[in-house]
Length: 517
Image (cartoon, rainbow, N blue to C red; front, top):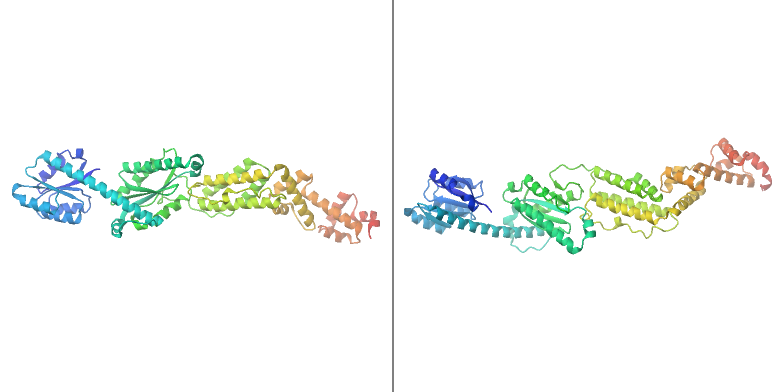
């Protein structure tokens, strides 16, 4: 830890000599400046953090005694070593009573000076460490209290003392944490988390950034970086630390807040950062100040639903995977966050299951449990890929539950029943396909495959059979029978009837008049 020292003497030669000729760096002392009287020293301290002052007694404007009085009042953590002549000894004794650490008599013995500075700087370092530990404890308790309503055991006065401090919040999590849970025991995961916390700590410590870290969730490490000087929290510095974690075997996503100055704002800051977390961005390191992909609205993916049902019915695993992959790529392109993706895909999978169940005579899908319907922790399933895997596994489970050999049978059986019940209406293949939640092309192909006829051939045959029955059993006029069985154009009915029966409707009735009551 480097100690920042200010040298104050009204003789410039002495100031410069003390500042530049002695081996301060070997004692981890940084001379941050020189001043020629107490007034200049106090002006410098308004903009510079000073740990130690080496000052003469007799100076113009404000002398060493006056400087000591103001420093002990305004900057009580700053230590003072005073240099005095023999005839100034009474001043030295007064300075000791005011709180000066020690004094040296002129002419100064260099070794004695270095030894004294070394001793005082050791005390400063020790005090700084104790102060930092105390401040860290107060800060961590305050943060836990603000964020998680944890009980707090420190006086309000001490909290008030540290409320005004510059800070950034870094929230980090392990990508695909659910996979870690599937591969590691609880004890092994705790070891991973300890290493994770240590790595972030080492990176920040090397950058001389003060911080503390707490786990807010099993896959969420909240790191609060703080400093009285906002320059110690510069984005470039924090980015270097975060990007230095990229080589760890468990890839991390780190989201970093802007700099804030009031600790009681931390709830809003934390929420801001975690909102960025659930966006599911692929970047490992992302600052909330960076421009995000503008989120677009997306409607329910009806087209993909139809395609997925068709692929499931056709037992085409590869096609299911391709459709799901393309769908999630579209989600990311449009900037949908994880909660939106979960909502849309949960609806998608449930609807597919329910509609397939409606189509089936057996209850093969009743026992299929959908992972996507369970409570999903987006801090564990924290990427689009994680949710994509859940959706894919659910759809493949649905497909597995449907036996391929029975698929075509019950689909076409239901379609034929629908046609028999609605043949008198102006129904089309697309309407029947929609009623059975499959695409028109797939329905037409399947219908032809299973019945040996196209939809229109099957419908016409059914209508003609009904018309023939009515012609042989009733005395209704031919055009009435034509309309009854679904033909609005009489000439077309006659044409189709003759094609199927070999004779016109009138000829057919004449040949079958004995059957009319």
